[in-house]
Image (cartoon, rainbow, N blue to C red; front, side, top):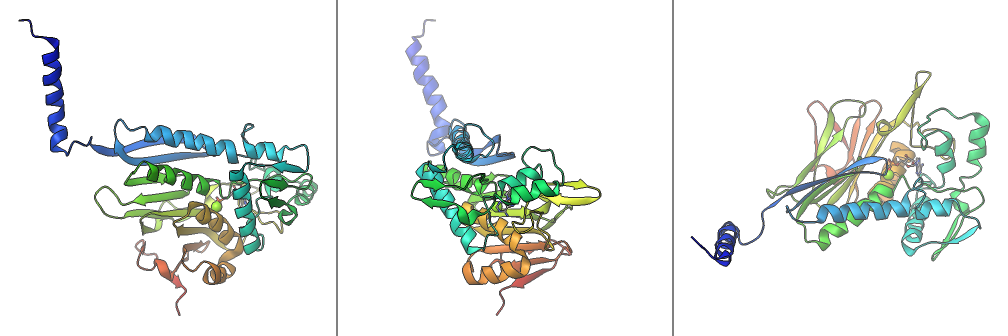
Length: 343
Ligand code: AMP
Ligand code: MG
């Protein structure tokens, strides 16, 4: 039988299209998983999209773009070039200058709890190279000479850094990247996604079944959760001692450092989690609140950021959360949560 090819094509197209017609002629949506290793972290994105969508590739390109902007270790990044400048004054891109200026505003607000100029001290501890060790006293005091963030200036795109100063955006980079990725989801009219950037989660929209996302908060150094948060279109960002640390002579040293001492912050806190719509702010505040400690950061929260949600966990395993999270934070069985901000 000699059936003209064209006819087969028509029938083929019809058979293929019937299920699509019943489905409203939209290709089926499924969570597409994209895994990327960047910023020293495994990034995992679950995005509700059709199988032929290029959303994963768009995210991958954005991660690379932001890494080339903010990484302190990528030799091709703009921040690396700034750290290895030849003159005291440099011209940065508007994007980098904007981030630096936002960081400085938070440093001023937090009395230097957030200090993006701490990089020489972070390096002295081996947190950059992976050669972790307690630094020699002279090495540390030399590094401490170079971390005076008040001496850096950002005017428009002109950046002025004192000699020897090097910047590290590790405290805010993943939060900034989160916001960039969320913008791509919006541009692509994505309705539901979960972005996990290791310690930085963004719950975009609702789950496919229409319910809100639930994000677990880890009990530091335990294989259990302190509780879980119900969230929607919000970042949930945790800064904690357990996320990066090493042990020397039986003592544990973690990666969030105190500009006053040059040593890891020791204030009885083990983690701080921030819940708010903006990923950059959540990341900047999680580090800042952690450095400030429980007492100072609860007062600061009440005065400056009462709309942001916060969960603090102490080394005694005590859990505190702000009143605005009372309905949305479910402590695990046996965990008691004390509410901050009660009248
Ligand atoms: P995070 O996990 O967001 O709290 O950020 C911690 C990272 O920020 C560290 O790994 C360092 O790269 C950097 N860092 C450490 N201490 C500070 C600090 N006091 N201010 C700003 N950045 C810091
Ligand atoms: Mg942070």
